[in-house]
Length: 57
Image (cartoon, rainbow, N blue to C red):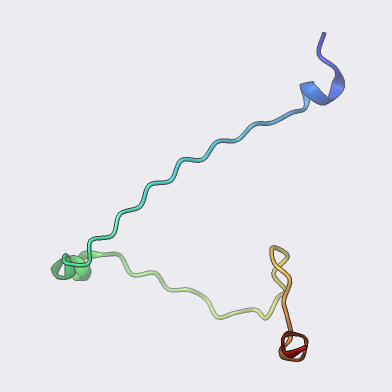
């Protein structure tokens, strides 16, 4: 039988493919424009922010 940890286990898979062709500048006008809101000055929990004073040490 499956134990409790194996029952609750989730497995995720993400496949990402990107392409960049710098010579297609004539298509730039057809790309969608995205308006981003101004920063809310919140802390990002995904990385640790380093102050200038800490970086110079």
